[in-house]
Length: 162
Image (cartoon, rainbow, N blue to C red):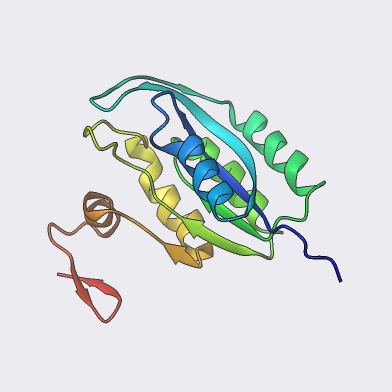
């Protein structure tokens, strides 16, 4: 019996500083013996201090990247990061409908520098169209506050509460 390498797909933005996004996901997956496929949703110009520019990849191109990977590779899990816009969220949500593996959602909304990485009008779509499909949700504190609409959140049996 041959051991097969697990395959995971990361769908996220590209961080020119290399500390986050697609670059960090590929490093983490590879370090854990996982073959990493990728779909880029946006290209950022950023470093450890700030995000100076974001270029959104058109939603049809994001959808085409997802289709290319899922139609050829036996992907067991998908990790979602920076989705940036409602249009990209809709393209990703449509692809997730047919996907039967695990979905990890890191709702990238705000860079460590405080810069926005998710358009304000995309939050509702993220909550309605992506979060219900998540097997694991990994927000940081500001993201948890934005997703729940609450000023403070506390751990209470795994639920976000006031």
